[in-house]
Length: 170
Image 1 (cartoon, rainbow, N blue to C red):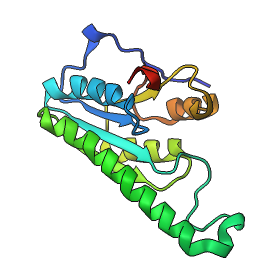
Image 2: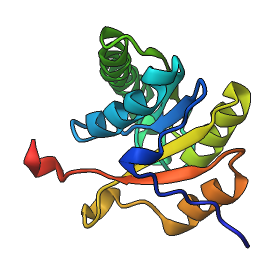
Image 3: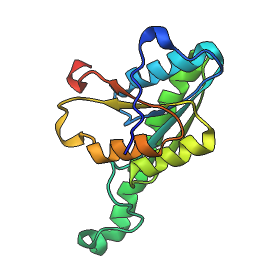
């Protein structure tokens, strides 16, 4: 199986109007990824598309897990609160790009299998590049290599992994 992973160096920026999809986890470290996407798209009058899934990853949860069914209303309230909070964080990243003169839109998806959402967004938006931020040695939030491989194999454009600083650096 062939994977398309692109390692971009500062001197090899795209020259035509470039649309860049950045997969953001909404952490402070992901601003480095958003900044890199804006650096690529901005000078070409391109667009940044931010994609995030609320709640982390894993299987989709539009209903409470069995352990929470006795308190379904409380579970829904917590999920709605988390969705609002993550939506606000994503809007801040979108606004950060806009404040720098870079066209940007944001897509927030319900918890689920994140590569599927990224592939859907990339195909629908016709992006030229997908940026995926990684934090080596970050522990529990480590990306599953099979998910990354699946994304790279199914992407309609190159996928670049961008090393992000450790969260402790912020």
